[in-house]
Image 1 (spheres, rainbow, N blue to C red):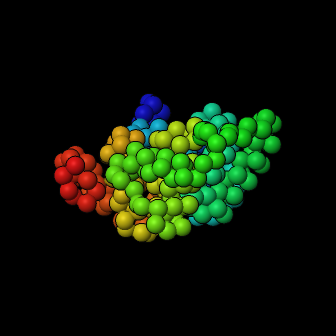
Image 2 (image 1 turned 90 degrees about the vertical axis):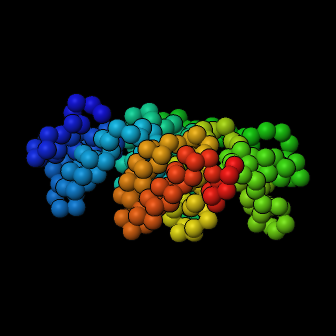
Image 3 (image 1 turned 60 degrees about the horizontal axis):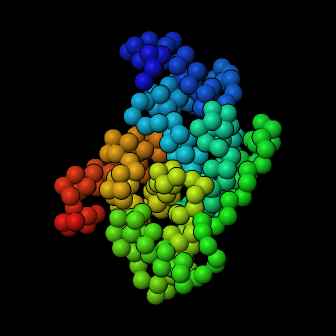
Amino acid sequence: MSDDAKVVMGDMDARRALGRSTGGAVTGRELGEPATLLESAWGDFVFSEVWSRPNLDLRSRFLISIAGAASERGDTPRLRDYVRGALAGEHITLAELREAALHCAVYCGFSTGEAIDSAASAVATALDLPPAPVIPVCDGPWDIAGRTQKGSEAFEAVMTFGGPQPTTAYFDAGILNFVFGEMWCREGLDERARRWLTLVGVSNSSMEIPIKTHIYAAMASGNASSVEMDEFVLQYALHAGWPRASFIQGVVLEMAAKVEQGLDFAGRAR
């Protein structure tokens, strides 16, 4: 945390100044005077007290917020603020945002992916950025049987336990063939970045098993520490709300303890 971020307790002027400077960096634009109480809270709390916290890097906060904003409201001015700030600050490239759109389409729904794609296009045009190249499928020819096998191997590597058998259309064509056989192995976005996008999607689902397994895998794989996962919960709460984040925090604490004890997500010895 920078010296500017160490706001003296009770110094509201310092808090507001930190919110203004941090918010400007996050949104890629100069923030005006707040016209409403909610606008004031964006500066005084969201930017001043959350985005300036030291235990999670800005790239990760951008990824969580872009996925969170898009999945909750679609292509809004707030989403475009995050995209502009990420691109202008060189935290995320345009090519990576295209990959994020695809990844969020899977875990948050294709409408969410379209919102990110749309915001990225609009902001890139405004910033006069060159188009991002379309990166080919990760490797080799289109071999469905081979890709299903590759997906099984990728699932185990990403999730830290074995995946489903290809006994249904969803498990075969969906999970193994496309999600893990193609998308997770694409080189356009690193695995840690994909983790944050995935965690937003599964947290939004309210489905206990995906939430527990993905939170466990994030820490067991080494992609995120328990401290970083605590910061994820707070960043996620800004867009999903405190009730949903409260459940996620409980799962993070539970799964962090299991990882530390050398257990799998179900509590069995690894």
